[in-house]
Length: 177
Figure: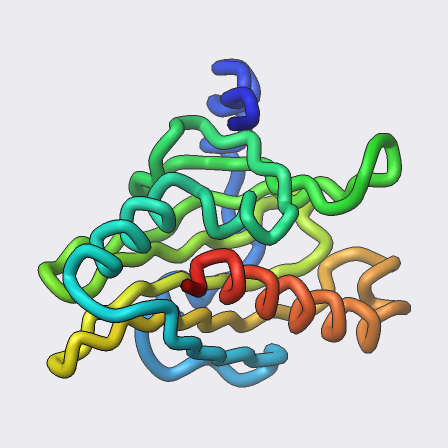
């Protein structure tokens, strides 16, 4: 498990405003003006599998299982938690600060969404949902909207879109049985 963020960094990130206005829109209709992504994958069957996937999701293991280093403010996802996601290696790693904007904790649906903070290469929101269907199927749904927020991601927008799709596939595989 990665180390938690130092308290000073947590406080600094919590004081920052999100870099987009459409907070919470991954719960329903995605806003126009952003690249949009919605992917779902079957990850198992039954209540035990659902509970395990929900626990993994809320323990940041979806991101870690995809190869993203996570430095969170707390070991489990909670509303207003902050984290710095690190993509890549060493000094070349891209730093992507986020804040959890909502958490779902229902008997058959568990998930959360985080929004981008200043310093993230993109601007937008990404949601992760694990769901237990009536037939016992357990799925993971990832929904996002984003647009470039730095000169590098604006110039490399097509590559940024490919990178987001690639990491989404890795997210889904990280929970698959």
